[in-house]
Length: 120
Image (cartoon, rainbow, N blue to C red; front, side):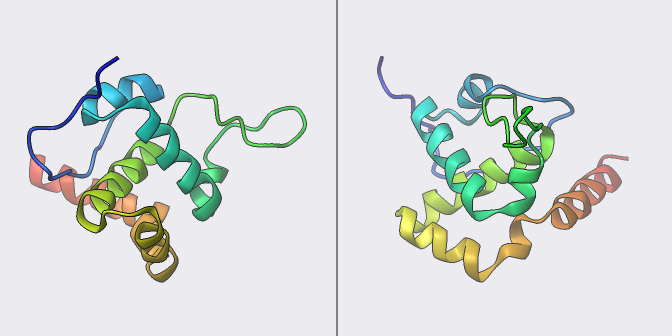
């Protein structure tokens, strides 16, 4: 299957009203499913609030096969933007470590609240 590419290099924050599968997110962001899977794994291991947002399996582990909730979709859109700017996984990892507040639930809720104010 040919790799999908966006027409522009810019990614905006993604705000959704419902959960999306990784395949649906692939279509929205215009990237390959492999990219979404890699980015979600990066977030799973580097961002505790992303990991905690997954439903739990009976053994207590995160069910990372479940659809992504709106916060998780937003995090992946931010990681996509970082990859577009920084180019390598190592640089993105360093950015997450240096600025964890950029991926926090608090930042997400603040951005969503500001978006709702603008839209009103």
